[in-house]
Image (cartoon, rainbow, N blue to C red; front, side, top):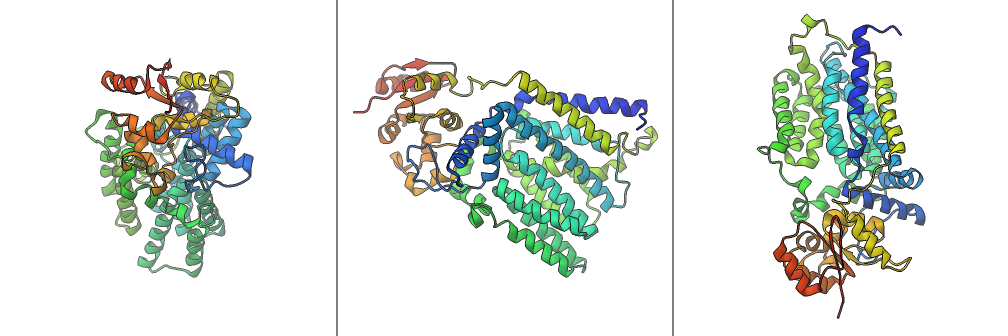
Length: 482
């Protein structure tokens, strides 16, 4: 392949941008720890979990296995390669996602009768990919599902343009994959497919093979470990608004400086609509869905980042870029894939040379070292810790009141002191009510964060005695039960 100077510089730029997405920022998510532990348990016992493990309740509380595929994969990678193994999964998923975002832009332009390539598409995709990487690619199932959802949408639109058998098979396969790796987001697939069917009805272009394919897409999702209950998992976690106790489920504060990129994205999204909708019913349906998800909360705002290329790719033609003779891409698809792979490979190699360490300021690393030194081998101590750190406690070998699997801990069976569920006690408990919760749940140790007010700490000291240990994260109270 012959390279122009501009293409060579563009290729170097791609590699440099990927290298600036530092691997260390893809670790230390509180959910990753319990995902690994749950995956290990399933591998060791040869079964899919339908109950919570390593909790104060033993194995009594029911659990919806809505992320089983992801948990098994991360457990295998961590067991074999440690934290660098988790990053390999991150890098592969990120590679697939970036290519999917670019292909999404090509598909949007193809639908509108424009040249598929555009010079602004790649830098735009890389820009939003940086945000996605630093905010959402942190050892959680959306790493896998985000790329699968984008590619599902690409093949769905391609199938609408040209109903080829290859696209039909890929749609069914991706629907099954999403349902098994991250079942909680599968409803998005059902809605996308419903929009496409409605589009065909309005255009009077419905065909029997199309109805069959879409029905397969809908029914194949049921073939997951949790069945229909997993597909409707969103109804479980939003019951009684328990999910609003978690930061990422709360409404987005658009006036906050830290959410400025989200605000700018929303404004840019609005600017693209007059040019990108083009009077097509599907685009109106899709716009409404993405707008709803994009402004709901931080967790669902990811969907607006994923699908902004679909709207922006058409908007680019309104920019007078032809004067710069950049109306098409400067690098070929093959070169792009090589550059992305090169940058991610360097990051992988770096992590194997310098494996990441757990941040002891955000997780009770020293505190669990102390507790485990006092615990007999094979025994899991009962440790009460804040919701955000309980996954790490469980990962290190402790039993917890509640971890990131929200659904087992909002059941009536977990109701305890003050009439609160285990989830509520975990979220509200580190307050003046902590002595009541300790008396009811009877943990062996309580880990409190260093940010605790002196007033609360003094009250807890009167109840539990002086902290037995003070570490980087906080303090450990050894509980003596009467």
